[in-house]
Image (cartoon, rainbow, N blue to C red; front, side, top):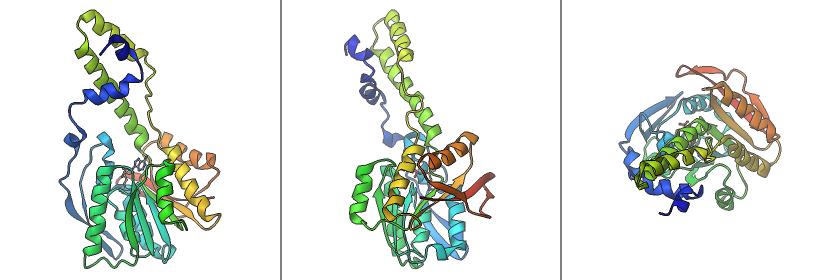
Length: 292
Ligand SMILES: C[S@@+](CC[C@H](N)C(=O)[O-])C[C@H]1O[C@@H](n2cnc3c(N)ncnc32)[C@H](O)[C@@H]1O
């Protein structure tokens, strides 16, 4: 690799791709275990992990407190879902969407992570074949990265009538993860650069160059694209015909403010569901209802 190539900011993507010798699969834990979840009178059996890696965003491999909060709310308010269609964002292993399939007539579970989609599809199959499925809904999984219009269009081609309910539980934490990932990328690129340099003098020069580069520290803030997608879905049905039910678990004041602010910036109404504020896994959780 020439010096010029090394110094080009757009060489970073390919450089760090070359540098990371341990592929994604090295970090993936597939040792799923069958776990039982009870929400009111509803019992679900799902494959999941008990902990997850934040590398490559494998957070969806386990059930989060937000899903427990939302599922408790759903099981206490089944009339909200009866006969409706629902799309879930960031479904993870699918505990919320699968519970909804007991009351809705159609549920589409979505996630952006391919590894998570694999276990999500397995859980859907497991649920469909289980004796206690009690399902009345057509249940399917689709890939959907928030803000990705092509993927959303693909889903809407299959479901042109849109959805009555959009659901989300614990789905806005990538803001912090992406900071970690950016540091990892800088580190990986720097290591490669050091190896490529013949002398100490060159190493020092490249080291300086890394920190001069305007690398995006917050590479991806997933809250605005999340609300872009939500707004698109809400607009499809029109005012008062569709709502976004979000189980929010507070982990930082900054994120609390950002979620509410981003809903307002998108011209949406955000209301706390009365009586929904509760402590879940030692954190404060709340159900928001978000509408046009
Ligand atoms: C913390 S997990 C929550 C999973 C599940 N809702 C629960 O509460 O158990 C966040 C989920 O959102 C998904 N996710 C994160 N960022 C996303 C994005 N930009 N687009 C789509 N899905 C995303 C992750 O793959 C993961 O499944």
